Length: 41
Image (cartoon, rainbow, N blue to C red; front, side):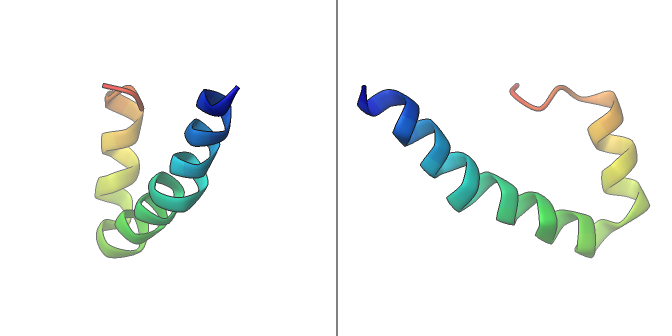
């Protein structure tokens, strides 16, 4: 029961903000990277 909540917390609290930061910082390079590499390594 706590696992789904923890996953959502990590997703919204850490992963999405980091992806926004990387997209701003690296732009098209990051977009190319995300197309080549799976999200969950």
